[in-house]
Length: 128
Length: 482
Image (cartoon, rainbow over all chains, first blue to last red; front, top):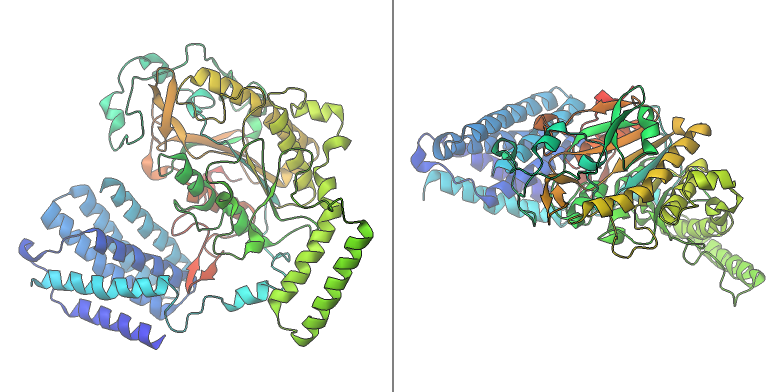
């Protein structure tokens, strides 16, 4: 368990340590591997919400905020796809809402938002 | 290396590594068997309380195997009739990927098909469902169903388990797990089919990562529906009784030394259940005591509908005895080997003519029978299929698979009777409002709700991960509830 926490913390800290992306030149590709990682993070977040694990849920929601930001950046600047950008924006806002709800111990509402987030992912996957 | 690349690579390397570790159950401190599972082994099917008062006690899940065409049964589309024989207008095809075998042909209707409204609700039925049509005011239609996939195997699996791959528990297994049994002498979850199993077979009623006690018990078609239930002819009743008594004594002695051995407790209970089932199960499925009138009501007097009617009559007897979930797969009628299910890629008029005749009278009979016995007030009947069929024709007069918009229906307590939820577009291709379309997860969430279960709180920890019946999705279709 300690190893897992250590690795996850290291992952999170490293992600947040990197500067925000500001130009098209250094935008990330949103590829299948990254999507698998987002899917896995989302699965774990939903599980943590169901188990009412506060710290883990906040960690997962914050990770989803970071990841959906990456997706939004990709679609806004790189792919220039309006519908996908809108879905990414909605996903980002939903992830922010989840983090807020968990911090307020509103796990049931957060779990409902978790479904919205998953549905947004599915809607986008119907396009791509 | 660009900053963004390194961040992404870092995420992939470390993030995916962690994910893989947890998927395989190697994360330290997360055992594969959790405490709740160990306790449940003692008596996994003991009755459990729902999260809130239930509207229904039992579900009869009528899987129409092979996917019937809603456009030929329940979803009347005047515009489709008007446009028959022409190409599909491009506006209808936006967002549709036709990766199924046939591509898009010209819009098709059977020229002999006729439609009529029934009951106070005015629900539309085609001439293929004359008996079911009389129950128009008992049914609650979901006319904007959608799913994923265009092949039977994966979409049937999704319909039953919520996933496209084998390994997740079926909805019946989740209900058995969450509520236990209401009759200790019978399985909580029974599966029946007439003549053939569906594609992929038993994984459709498996327990997945739940303990095996929650999987469906398949009752075979025919006079002796339960495998190995009857005592072998070379063993006398006295010999069997003595052998079981000795086994019980030996297990009992062992249990005194290992009082916390839940697996041994479960084994003892399994033998006890098997012994009780030897008496209770044959009686539960023996329809010889039913009146001739009842048998006729279920279509047992017609070779086309007899085998399916037989399973439905047994279903009524099982819910009467407290079986929680009866899962019935439509097979095929006797007498015509060319028709095996509803999968009408060609000659739909012939296929649906036979298949509708096989199910129409039995299902109407089931509804009437349940109603007359007061059982429809505690039973939920669900007409479901892996997908629907396209408005365009295939091979001349067939139809291809359609996961984008089709009709399913329910009947029973807690529902608005004679009500239609949602609609498809003017040619019956897609759900008219894709955001409001009802997916498998929503159907499952709604069924669980009617059984008094919150799908978000119905969880099982597998490999350190809380799993639920609706995966990461699902919303109760509140519009159809009373």
